[in-house]
Length: 288
Image (cartoon, rainbow, N blue to C red; front, side, top):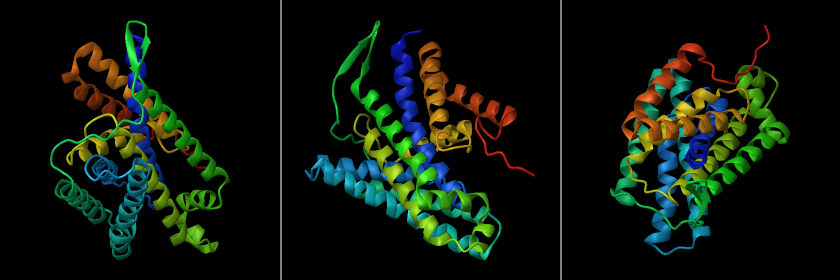
């Protein structure tokens, strides 16, 4: 197997892992699966690309704007949509439908504000490295590096940070956390901010080397969720493991079977995971 195919898959998988990390953080804070995560990633990425390529704004300011947009969108999903619905009903179906509706609202808003055509931003790095008979692009290595840094920072925050440790307590048992007097709403607010930052980083990184349009959110949401399912919720690194495995499987299957077989391979992978190990590769052990 050409090593360039594997490395390329790892770079793509690192992007999937970032989206899966956003799922992980949001679920840890709310116990709800937010399928609008893909829309947050898409919107933040398209915003940064629009500001850089159309408005001529410096990349640093565009990235900051994307981060702020990611934080606001995640906060709206939790505080403006999910929280009011869950306060009125225990059935999660209504909350899921509301989140899906929000996803399509963000999708159409991105199409109106930016463009309905695929756009790409200026690359952060450019060039290739020859590996065997193929090559690896610099942006693939940059994506891997950024993903590892983000995961390391989130893992450190969850283990050592004040709100990170409290988020773990809230995720384990929110009722007990309230009884102990933990500021649950503030903890969730901080978690939403971190989730928004992760979404923005994923969006800014992916649009720097591949075109993204307002429909890309669906693919992002599905692939990120698959990576999340594969990795599980055992620790902060689990989504990255799931993303990397997914990226390599996708890359190898496309190379060996053709691009058209990719979707069938991914579907078979999801069915296998749900059948054999629905909790993912890593999961939290709960003592009786």
